[in-house]
Image (cartoon, rainbow, N blue to C red; front, side):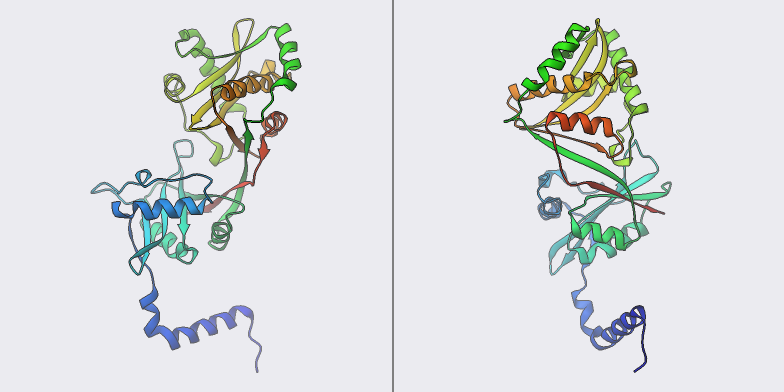
Length: 326
């Protein structure tokens, strides 16, 4: 018997199977169609299961496309049951040249869903990005097989606030206090001069902090930063002789708070200022009844990873950002 390379054997076997079973296989192929409002409960369940319950999605998180607009979400339906879903939409203002692909459900349908999405993809974008955690095996396998490149890695971390002890950070806070540093929660009605300084500091962080597409925030104006802090966040600052020199922001989400936007002025780095400020913010969160704190960032941002490790955050599985050129 002549030797066949693996690729030819696979092709021959697949061809033989198609010839033998072709009349019956079409009955088992899923139907791909745009998401409808009636699919919301099924899609919420699939997406929640896809992220292993890391986040919980509700039906109201999913909306049918408006008439006359391109549907960004497709579903795969088999036997009248929604078995998978895929969404392809702009990644965000911070990454204007990219579309983001999210898939969940039956992995056997991911490739047909991707091809259907790409066939109707809007113009003006040069790449597709996908984000998944390294232990979400079925999605990791799909992106690799579909020709995506493992381009960037990010870390996520959580802290149990029920056991958080701020006592070890008191010596550094006292040392900094004697040097003129004082942490506080920012007053939402702070004067305009404080908001001007805060926005300049925010811009410094955007400029200096290592980022990848997943950790790149949407751009904010001065007024946009003020509005989001007033509406959604608790912001904490460190003043040095009255001037704001460090900022960290917490977003309350039920019993959890998410940390983001942490930055120290370049003239005041490597003194423990951010460690002391985040300890102050986490003490506030603990006192406010929050039980867990979450944070994350690109693996390239080692200074912030060190700060969070000192505070007791436990780093979880890495998040992988996959890239495919269009």
